[in-house]
Amino acid sequence: MKKFKFTISGKPYEVEVQNIEGNNAEVNVNGTVYQVEMEEQVAPVATPVARPAQPAPQAASAQPASQPAQQPAAAGKGYKMSAPLPGTIMQIFVKQGDAIRKGDKLLMYEAMKMENNLLSEIDGTISAINCREGDNVLQGDVLIVIG
Image (cartoon, rainbow, N blue to C red; front, side, top):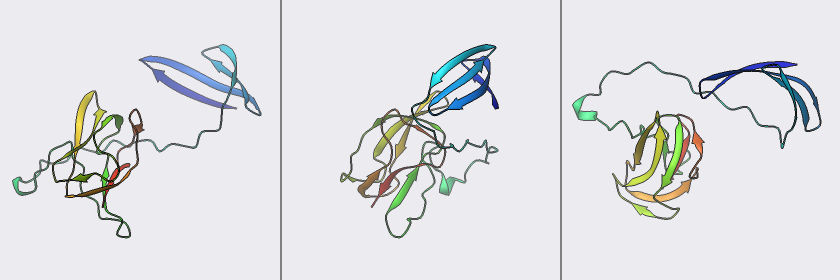
């Protein structure tokens, strides 16, 4: 049916889904056939796109690399703090309803094997937290909304 190529921990795998009946599938992985049970169908996930390196920011608008660009609020619901890079949420330092000030540490995430802090860009109150510790996030995913 469908063929896929995966590299996991540096090791290549060729996977062919041969047959699917209900939540049971027959897959061939590098020549070995397995019968697997699927829990549920997974929705397609957007793949992060590599972007070319950007020139160094001007001194007047310098912003630490761990902070995303401030995005305008959608329908007056607050400022959206987005993931500047794909990564994994390691620790969340705030909870919904917390009052925060510009520069406060909101969360720590791992991206490109480095721990990064997401800092508040404005004063306000946490109105939504759209991630949990351990979540994998993509670049541009809205992580926290500040009202």
